[in-house]
Length: 200
Image (cartoon, rainbow, N blue to C red):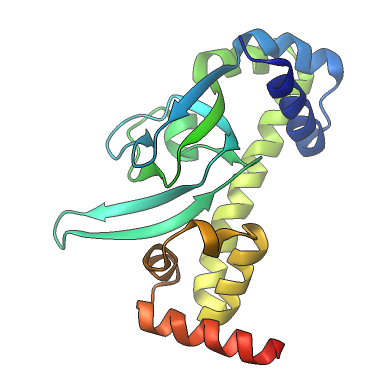
């Protein structure tokens, strides 16, 4: 069972996100469960089907692709508190994920598994609407990332990242941020210096 505080968090996040009614939310409460993931462990792994849709209660995660040919990791997204966390394509089609989702800190997540969410979609119009909004959200997230890579400078992408995760610099090693931006650590240091000089 989830706690009163966790129920309050669910209400806050889901109501703001999709406008579900109190009745819609109440019918889902029995299906939510809590996962604790230690720093360095995984929410989901490459080649494994993602079975849960989660909401981050506490912690920071990175989504990365591991290329066995080059033995390199490339960061794609980050998730932090009060955000939905999922490998969306793997989840909705129930086929193996192509990347890893790793906890960068000790983390807690509230999760809803795939069959239970499908039951909610089938039996409640409000949850059917939630599913549509969720799909739109992750499509926007994915296309936004693609457009950033095509049209924005490294500095603009870095500023956007800080806007989404305000205390990221204090929580995530620089080399992970540099990997996300597609640059080296030295280039990230120069970006930070430029931004600092502009502020002063």
